Length: 497
Image 1 (spheres, helix red, strand yellow):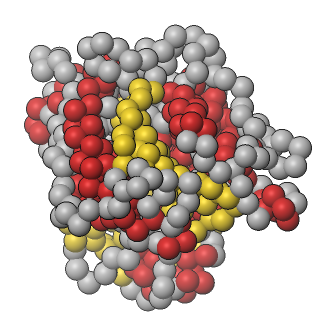
Image 2: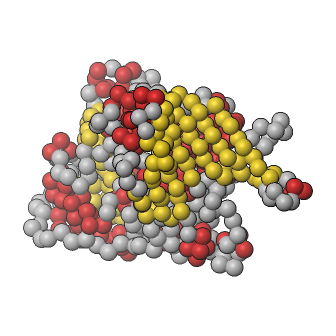
Image 3: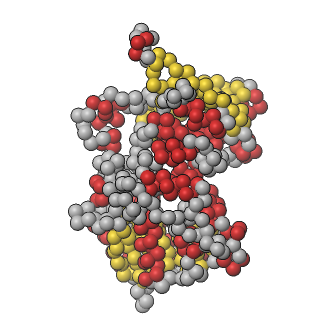
């Protein structure tokens, strides 16, 4: 799989600065899907072309559990994964050019923020033809302002009766910000072949909205893009659509209100029609726990784009709401989602959005009624868990802590999640029920908290609930111990992509 990024004229000397890759040397990166190589075929004062070549080990893919449980299936060995530019290339672009996708450049900030003349060339891109003979790649990229050229070759030059190949050579030309171009590629490449090589869950909605910001809501093929990006999971598609179109709404004074309950025919985790999807049941469980401890001042640590904050803001019983996240872009999205510019000064004063890390102590969240870590701990490297514990339970020391995290035992109930895989590529681990209980009890004992465990979602006898929740209540007469903080063992049945 090969993608080249070319620019000409006065922008040519800046391309390497924007990509954060030195043009004078080739670099290689080991990824979960193979090895990515970055090099510059052309680097002159007038023309600069950067190439990303993804080298996929077809045998390793065939032997990997993440690509299917049936080791005898012929499709595991005979497929287009080693050469077709699909979700594996999208993942490589997202990881290798992460800083460029974020629009960050300390040496060329003005160039990173402005459109530039770009030419993107990709090999072997799937592009199904509609009834008018127009390829899907053209229908996806042309509405974004790209000049699209699809070159379709015969499947075999010596066998014309076999017809044309299903893939095309794709060339895109346009005046676009580099960060926008890379985000569009990472969203639309998996759409072209209607497949993602990794499991799609709740977190994928937020990623899709972030990468589709500014263009996805108005795209004429929005429904196709969201459906294929979210693996045809109707509840996730409906949630993404409602958030794109602003249908999650606001209540009279700007307090957020919930969108209607999704009515899916069947979710990927086996939930039946008209059942509330898991991500909403999780938020409801957290709100119930906060009500049980009569919390009025709350910090949502690792708040992301504000999925829980909007529920807290809608409830006037929460007088102080703090959202923290390490990423300023997430905090900006949370602010827009809460629509703080449209509410009264009194309402706005209830909310503070702070850049902060869960593994560093922050006095600004100390002494509250409650701290929430909703689907946060599994994103922290295991060796950093003692730092998380110290920052929340020792430094902040709230009256209560609510922690939710996936239950690894329940993963077998997700039909599209291959054995040994985590629910999201950014998860560093996923705990079983026993492992989570052991960690929570040890933390509670060290810092003077009683721990109550609650299921989130259907609690099946064999595998437990899909999400597990621990509610920590601080003993009123206790003080934290001075014992050392140790890392609890984690399930490592898969490697985060």
